[in-house]
Image (cartoon, rainbow, N blue to C red; front, side, top):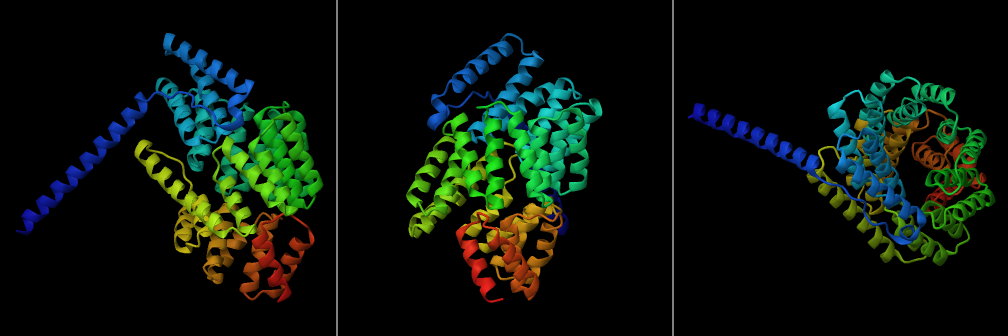
Length: 447
């Protein structure tokens, strides 16, 4: 009897393995045969000359590939177009799949195709598959060690994996090959996370000056400059850069979001809501919806704020499930889901997702900040502290991090450190969320 049960169990196991294998093969075949087309843009971006040019370029490239499927240059150009369109629309899931199909087609013919490897590493970054991005970028570097672009990918990969020393090393190589907007922007970020805001601002100004006015990448860089000013407490300079970004690239979503934050500071909540809604209509980015939820809460419309917050969680979960059915790799969004669940006060789910991200990237400062903040939100202050210390290992002066650190140290009994951190943040006039600022002010009064 026991022997029969054993053989039945083995048979069931083998059948399950075979089923999974063939299901995987079927999914991979469907991915190979899937045809990707440009999706219509939404909002004001659909009425631009740029969009007409992008569509014309895409049609030309598709026609070239129909005439000659082995046209490598056309396939690389099409993959690059998909990657750029993902940035403009925020539809990373669709366009990353489209770009990945292009580069994988090329790599099947030649596993050492440098351009395809470089783009594949970039797509892995977009999908938050950071370790895979590094492996792919390193292979590309072994083929061509004199390309600045791929070193930039390595910088990003090392940063996301928490190896900041290696990131600096790759950045030095990148700059030595080609000092441009992309390299200056990375210099700025590494200076920022090491606590050098003046140096970060200086480098980001160089990045803006090196960019072409009106390009999405230049507008993004100028918005980052504005955000650095926000974190430094210089709201006048921040607003000026958001205005300039909108002049050069009208209705740019992240510049609109910057102006919305300026409106919140002035308690012009209706203006902020209108700006966030306009931004949200042009690009798919959950952070815009989260910010919109925060403004409704400030305005006293808690029901509306909660509705948006719940909608974000539902949409993210449904998207993750759908992607799991369509794509064998998918996008990791656990850190984002952790914060989304905090918004709806589900700290248990938030912890599950925060730890899932932590298990992949235990040395990253942002991930450790997330885990620390979730533990704080659960009232588990002793567990929060070790992660907070990792989050602060680069001497980052990010005001949100410092305020959270002050609150965690306060609850952990280190009154002196808590007081010092909270005083720094609150005296610096940096733009942090109202609820965090209020909590910090109350804690400081009790120290």
